[in-house]
Amino acid sequence: MAAALAAAPAALVAPAFGASWRPWIDVAPQPGRRALGFPIPQAGWHGDSSLAAAVRLNPRLLDGDQDRRRPPNPPRTPSRPTPPTPGPSEWQRFAAQLAVFGDLRRHFIFEYYPWYGADPWRHWNQDGRTPPGDIAAFAVPALGPYDSRDTKVLEQHARWLADAGIGAINLSWWGPGSFEDRAVPIVMDVMRAHDIHVAFHLEPYADDRANRLRDDLLYLIREYGDKRRWDAFLLLEDASGVARPIFKSFRTILPRTVSDCRGRVFPVPDFTEDATWRRQVDALRAAVRSDFEVLLLADSLDFGRTEAGGWDGMAIYDPFYRTSNWPGAASAFSSRELLFSFNMNAGFDVYPQRPPFGECYAPSRIEPPISATGWDEAGRAEAFAASRARVLDSLRTTLTLQLDAGLVDRRRGFFVTYINSFNEWHEGTAFEPALSFASLSPAQRDIGYHNPDEGRWRLQLVQDLMGELTRPALAREAVAV
Image 1 (spheres, rainbow, N blue to C red):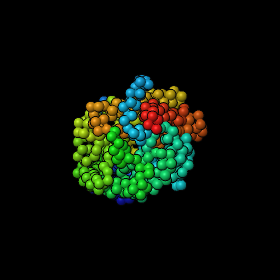
Image 2 (image 1 turned 180 degrees about the vertical axis):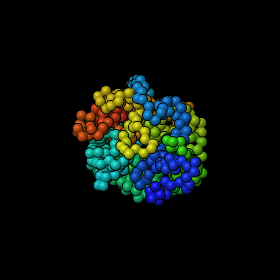
Image 3 (image 1 turned 120 degrees about the vertical axis):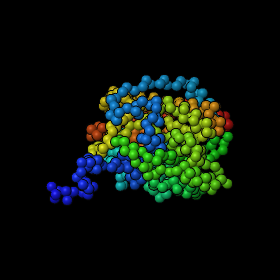
Image 4 (image 1 turned 90 degrees about the horizontal axis):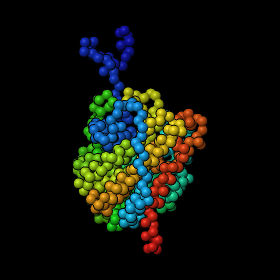
């Protein structure tokens, strides 16, 4: 016994064998950064959004979204009834209101991830997956596991985007010199050739990155704006024609602490004081004021802290935040004259974890939820219907709120809808075409990918909707010519 104790790690040995010694507490493993939702920059893991981090601490923030307050392993519940598809008159009404914007395509922006690598593998091999057959994705892309720097891949992406009527992408960016930063020049070159402009989505590449916000944004403006003569950098025009760069920040307004699945509280390593953001934002505005203004959006529903940090408004990222909650948030931000943007999304379908799971294991979940227990024909049909309904509902709701004459966006001539996402394959948000289910090999079906019956349906729906929304603008341009 003594020899065994002597060989044991120090952390497992109590200082004394008293009645109060509880070894099961002493040896309880500490959760890693990923289990707590903290970013892991070296792995390209961006962690929880601002909203998701706040929800970890206080689930009541999602009151009204009953599914988020269920036990960790709830039974499947039937999906909500599918909302009716808006008729031509409704889309035409939206289109008439949107016609005030000179180039409407630029106001619909796909979230875009230039973080995939194939030599060596990058992101596709997340969580121990072994590409090319076994990849960290909810479904197999039509192009397979590709490299984000491959010109042929980028050209196909650009053609798909242009055909869908989208005029801009929002690049996930992980700091100067990062893999994603080195991919920017070729991405911009290809997108420019297809008349697609590029904005930037600032990721949590370091716990202290807030102290570099001014320098980071000046770097982006200099390297990809000034040096390229603004050939592909998105300058978003408001209703009066004034153009400004627009930047979106992920994981911005954070709580000081979060709780794990056992209720233990941990400090958030990249928490940033509002005053720090304010100093950086003010310094940036002072540096560019003689040339232009910038639009800065944070991914937060905390309008008080968003205002205190100097941000122009918010653009949340999360598909789990239901549209029924959007009007209240829009009203709150509008009351402070803060801009708001809610994303068009098809929900999410995170690829399943594999053992070892760790102590905070939770089953993978589809959002919107479906009642089917497998990815058989019935399950695929139900998921398709629920996801299609989410696309229509999210677009309809964000258009209704942003075009409301009583709210700040319309008053200030601001409109932008981010689409989450073009190619975030880990979280199941991708609109990029996937292989159709019938095209999967037996081995791929055994892995359990959730490829739909028609792999291009999401992007085709975007194309159809954009056709409806841009029709008056196209007619006006034709008359002007």
